[in-house]
Length: 141
Image (cartoon, rainbow, N blue to C red; front, top):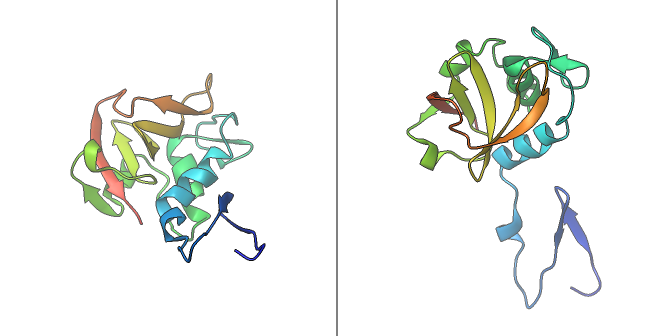
């Protein structure tokens, strides 16, 4: 309005006729996903925690959440106990941790996850969050 331009979390906001920008507010979980997506294409490294030089699945989740001031364990098994339990994939929100047997990923929404997959694929997006059997879903924020 009045020639003012505003940006938030990389999204353009246009407010007209006295409206508010509240409907474009990015949640903490969406911020986690947006940050995690910056590292897609980077390498997988067993035992690694570097988002640029290589991380394994739990190291990836741990390092992404560390950026937001959350301290998580470097173990996919231990990450099954962080935060609060989410009852089902249909109730999952962006930023939730999807825990599989021996693997973890960050839920992006729209049935997709971002994760440090394996040495061949590195950090990537997978369509179909239940591509493996889900053990539990955890909400940190």
